[in-house]
Length: 191
Image (cartoon, rainbow, N blue to C red; front, side):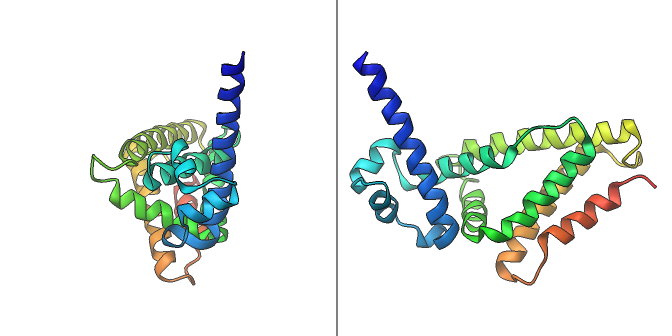
């Protein structure tokens, strides 16, 4: 019985750490967020925090997973809703520049198969491509999207455009990521 309680407390503490880390990174960015600041905010030492995460990169990878979990919401069968949701997420990223920076930085570093975030990004892109391809195909089937593009290829293009726009925005905050990705989505619509 005590073992189960300790396990539940560990899960709760890990969730608390992730929530605090999301807030700290959103405010201070990837480079500005320290393990010490996150540990202090949850009442732990740095060593105590690293009991829950083996490294800063593992912590930050878990933060990205948590961010994705919170952003997902309900998966609707309506392709138009899925595309509009995608546009809303990209537009909302303006409010969390630190998380955008974390995502772009780790995505580059994770190209190294030994990086803590490598598997996260491989899985994320596979799942996102599959989900986007399915939504594009459904839109083509119901007539809401043009039928003259290959859904598999366009899914990769939409994802690449979103990631590229985030990088451009980090370099030039005057870029309206939401407006630009909405223009791409509008170009896919039928009629």
